[in-house]
Image (cartoon, rainbow, N blue to C red; front, side):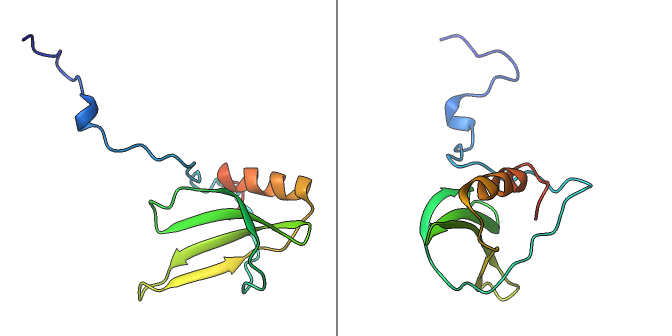
Length: 104
């Protein structure tokens, strides 16, 4: 059997790939997003990978959409917060801005 070339990585050596998108690091002009106490649940439309301490979901309830942020506090407890609600086109723009690091 021949040896693989130097620097070659086999599939078994690779970390598992995340199936959900990751949020980009905040940009220098990142806008703050107002986070509120959750008042509704809603249907999950899109989500980010949960391999980090904080992950996000785009949800819909009552014809409006909002972003749900789930993170762990210093004690390890889950903290769930919601953004304001928007019509679908505005929510899509906010979601994309979040993924690109323009919004937090």
